[in-house]
Image (cartoon, rainbow over all chains, first blue to last red; front, side, top):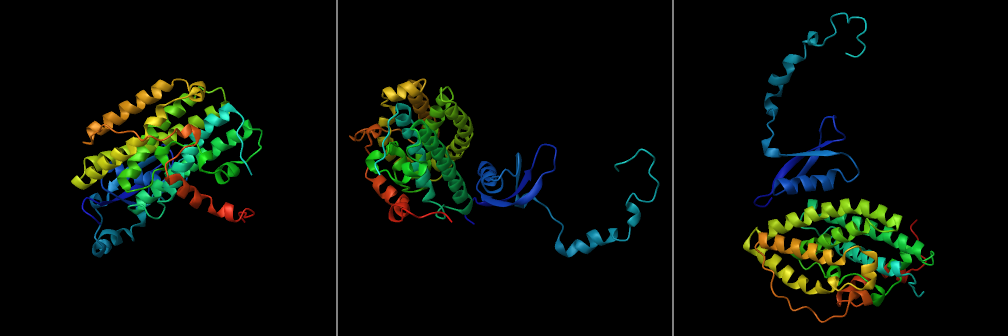
Amino acid sequence: MEKGDKVWEVFVQKKSGLPFKHVGNVHAYDKKMAVQNARDLYTRRSEGRALWVVPTEAIVSVPLDQADAFFDPADDKAYRHATFYVTPDGVNHL
Amino acid sequence: MKITIENNEAKFLFRIADTSLILGQRLAELCSKGPFLEEDIALSNCSLDLFGRAEELYKIIASIEGNKFTPDDYVFRRNEREYYNIKLVEQPNEDFAWTMARQFMHDVWAKEVFTQLLSSKNQQLVGLSEKVLKEIEYSLIHSRDWLYRLGLGTEESNSRTQAAFDHLLKYVEEIFNFDELDKTYLTNVENIEKVWQDEINRVLSEINVERKEIQPLTMRDFRDGFHSEHIGHLLSIMQYLPRAYPEAKWS
């Protein structure tokens, strides 16, 4: 990578109201270039109507070596799923 | 096969169709040779837009001309003097600054031309213009943004951009020597020059590139099929396969 060159993560929204999905990344030197590169790489087959680009360095992730501490404690807590009570009549979509 | 053109509207449309085709071919030459992967794909997208635009225009021309020839005939079976593109777009990809300067100069012109074609009596042409204006708008954003980066970038990128404009501006004068055909099929030819000059001057003044007094080249008009030396090389590559193998088919 040259000076000023950054990696940006790309998120595409298929249509208004749907969530933005991560689709990949692009190299770019500034915001405008990032969003244009994302458009040219990831929406050329009508994949979406809106785009986000985020500098990869702005994304904070859980360190891999702490994954057990972060996520394993949830494994034996099935009661967190809302399956232990009777749904009232008329509730069809929970 | 001698390609003939009978109709005045067809003669006029060849100028726009050929300009799209030749610029498309110039950008296609950069496929796999872009400065970096993302820009390589952006240039190829833009090239495909131009080829698509040219093909649709050749289809309209073919139907005006009673389908005596196909779009492929028009592309692959005409010689230099039978091409009517503006000389600006046949200039080679000297470096990236040239490519973007040429693109920007073309896009500003194309935007105003297709805007005026929205008022055409030919409904096919109106439909096509509505579609391609969106492509041109995007291409214009892309090429103009690059000129700001290059002009306001490093000393090297600025001097290359200056050199690109110094050279390419020599080919511009003919674009605005409108003839009767232009005046018949466009709604306001004077406005094409005004919009173009205003936008070029505005951008150049903002990116620290000087618009120098240019000695225009004494070359005859593209409307009569005159060109710079570059078009022959371009056509020889573009037309090689169908010329060498006239029976070749996509399988």
